[in-house]
Length: 156
Image (cartoon, rainbow, N blue to C red):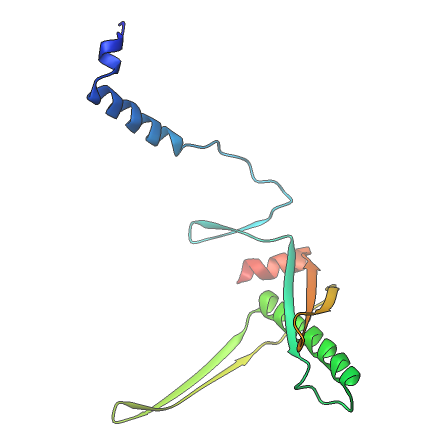
């Protein structure tokens, strides 16, 4: 079958060509998953587990106890590091949330939310501790995933 230029320039032919182009543009090659990128499969979906977990902890300088500004800065650096470790434990082990609300005559009287995290963080390293603004210190913490941590992720 030979297609001449008069047939190609018709609106129907253009519509067919554009529809085919749109449908084919959604296709992609299926790539195999490398062993370096572990994945958890749950409910028919695949979730990639990162190889390195990075978290950031923050602490205000002015709210720290201390005799002078230098001491407050050191305390803020320490507090930001502890907060980063808390975030890391939360990422690895999860966070327990307790909530309680009270109502009287369909009017909310009180709302209380508590959060807790518990777990051991081994092998994390401090990447850097730095001032964010004039009154805040931040600590970046990262953890290379090991087989035990990956198994913890898979259980979640």
